[in-house]
Picture 1 (cartoon, rainbow, N blue to C red):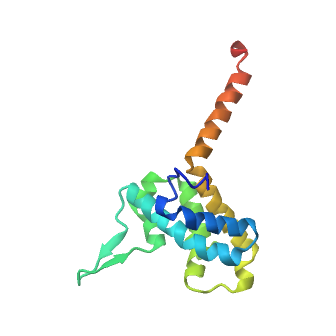
Picture 2 (picture 1 turned 60 degrees about the vertical axis):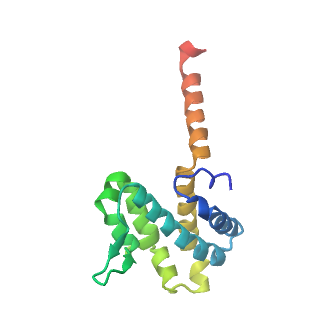
Length: 160
């Protein structure tokens, strides 16, 4: 829970869903974890894209609004300019790519049986999603910065 709070990736109204998904994964229950986390990760990416200035909906000729696909969002110029190339590549591999794992797409379309949900592919996507949350966590960022400062202090002979 402490990783999810004050997190640039996890929308505040979705913290409980992320916590439940990660808790299930820590118990090796990916049949529960993946269906919870994949839609939450997609929503988090949509929110992040909007923060980057992207429009994640399109208006149809009849005036109705439609969500852009996750793959389309990852190709928007605002998103490409805002996020690192490696991160975009991994988002595609784990969530949308037909050449990678594409777990979000396969989960959303009901293409995964119990065995596939409980496989190494699910574990990898679960860990990647946890890594995303850690990358954007204020608490984790503060810890990394403190560690860097401590290492710099210890390696600087004039500081001792």
